[in-house]
Amino acid sequence: MGVWLHGVDGSRPLPPVDPDAPVMLQYTSGTTGVPKGVLLRHRSLVNVAKLTMETAQTEPRPVCVNPLPMFRTAGCGLSTLGPLWLGGCVAMVERFEPVAVLDLIRREHATVLFYVPTIVGALLETVRASDRPTPALRTVMGGADSVPRAVIEAAVVGVPDEKWGETVGVAVCLRQAPEPGGRAHLKAHCRAALTPFKVPQHWFHVTDLPVTPSGKVRRFKLLEETTEGRLDPLP
Image (tube, helix red, strand yellow):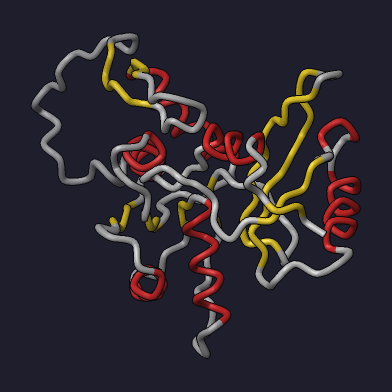
């Protein structure tokens, strides 16, 4: 922080701020229903950014690339206050284009990339189709779980069940057309990484997931497609 404040006129006092005072009104993405307003306070917004960067063991003075929308807390909170806390800088992305973002990472010698699943999936596809070397990053930070290489994206949804009330289902976007035995392979992968009750019982194949403007899965739409039988079972 001292490095970031170097050269600032320290004689002018900063305005007093109550850590528990409201600072931002954010709206949820609408992944489970109608977006809802959430009142955020100074203390919680700063702590989320600070603790996330520390948990990820991000090095001081990072050069970060932020392709996330600024109307989401990940874009305007974590991805800005986090680098600020560590005395770093942020390269903003006005419009996400995979090639342009990869060029930006190379040009700015970025060390940190913030992402959502749709962004990292597009970047990986672009890198695989290019003969240029993959940019070197020290930290890639986002909200997606790791999935097998054959899977581009996946989303879990609760499937209504008469006996248990709800069971686990998953919709997957595959890199190639589904082949017989694919479900068994992915299920074995999940069994090796998850506790038994988290392993999906229902598997569906989709070409695209329904997403919000910020790239998050609209789970209530996915649930509608599941319950109405509009999703193809994964073989």
